[in-house]
Length: 86
Image 1 (cartoon, helix red, strand yellow):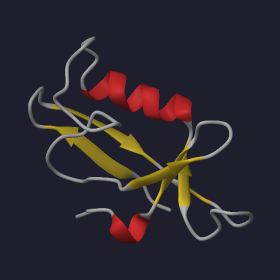
Image 2 (cartoon, rainbow, N blue to C red; image 1 turned 45 degrees about the vertical axis):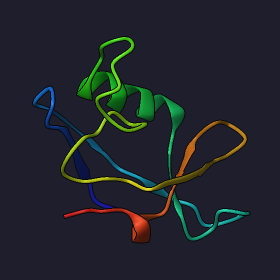
Image 3 (tube, rainbow, N blue to C red; image 1 turned 90 degrees about the horizontal axis):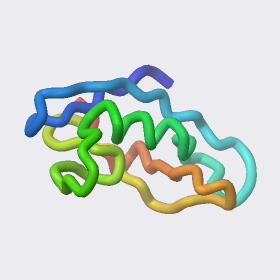
């Protein structure tokens, strides 16, 4: 999987993320982003407590990742086919 650039056009910030493929188990065929990476994305894109400018990852405008679930370790499960990636 390649790097995906996420942006927040409200704050003028950007960050990259690499969703990891899931090959076994209930979510096989989808991708995941760890909770720690999601927190980094949110911090890089917004970082303001209480701000609701972006989605779960802090993105607004541009690419959008479709979060469809969370696993036992609270990693985000991503459906790349339902995401908007330019």
